[in-house]
Image (tube, rainbow, N blue to C red; front, side):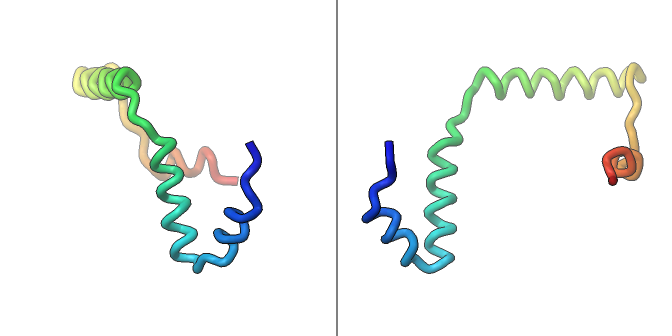
Length: 71
């Protein structure tokens, strides 16, 4: 569906802070929570904490992580 020219023109004339508020509202409307995904992430976090507490995994310093991906 094409964005109407009238809407585009109106948005173009908006001050930057209003454009930002509009973008935030649009993005928020797209971010609908999915409880099943939230539950999977919750379980993953609990599993990692348990594994760390039981010394099955160890931590890595932030310096090591950043150095790995620095280019």
